[in-house]
Image 1 (spheres, rainbow, N blue to C red):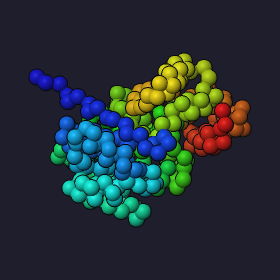
Image 2 (cartoon, rainbow, N blue to C red):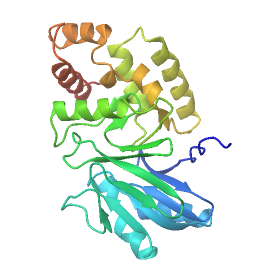
Image 3 (cartoon, helix red, strand yellow):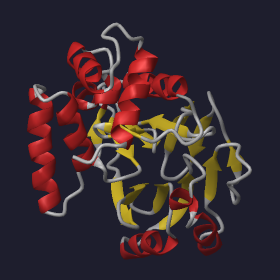
Image 4 (cartoon, rainbow, N blue to C red):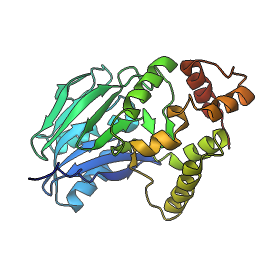
Length: 264
């Protein structure tokens, strides 16, 4: 009797200064996520002898959709899924909470999760042991609140944190080293975080990606998933004037504001 299918290997394609376009392929056809630039994606596909079959879009920011139109012109058979948002053109399929994206080749299926906060229409895609979280959940961090409320963002993050621990977190930016610096300022006694920050520093010195992460690791190191931890409450009381018994939404809002102004 065979076990569950192996998790596909996600590949981060660097674009701009710190974005990743994620790719999964079966040796012939590829799916890519959030193609902010077309050129690097096309080069990667051609280098590996792959055709573009599918595109997933998490949100409308140009560094996530800027290459979508050019890639669809180059591979007109490619199908694109993304949120209902007038700021996103060139989609074949508009999807939202509870929908399933079914890709024929590579043979993949993803559950669509609405995760507002960074933007009002932000989606995440979960399946095959992978989470494409866009700019909602980063390793050791989370996205800025451009259009959503702290309550929305915290609920979105808690939803992602409840996914299976071995889920690979494929997020949109290489922010991990800076995020770890803030996380260590907030929770300096976290030994798992200390070890991971050292590992990330080594990877980045070698020009290696720090991603994908894992949900179980994020539960252990990410301060935005740990707002109810006593050590974080004590830090917020000392640095943000927040009461030790503040509710989780207030703690999250204070923590996100502290990260916005952090210069460590």
